[in-house]
Length: 59
Image 1 (tube, rainbow, N blue to C red):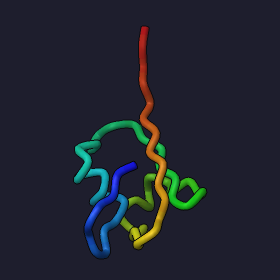
Image 2 (cartoon, one colour):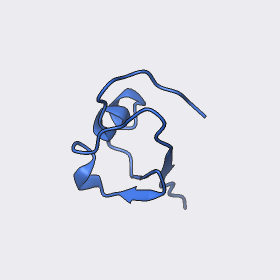
Image 3 (tube, rainbow, N blue to C red):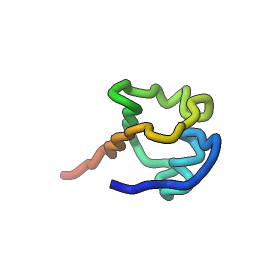
Image 4 (cartoon, rainbow, N blue to C red):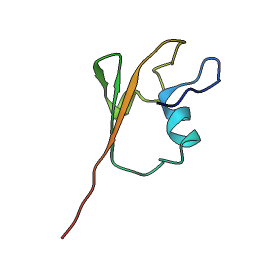
């Protein structure tokens, strides 16, 4: 588990902070999947629980 400090941070800003820009991700906030198209609109609040899953390809 990782805790972040940041007021009014969006999921998009979180992705940049975690150096995950350009990765294929699914992000769940408090049990609800957040569509990629809404990453810049969804703001995080104290106590939110996130799950971030990245797609891994292989051959």
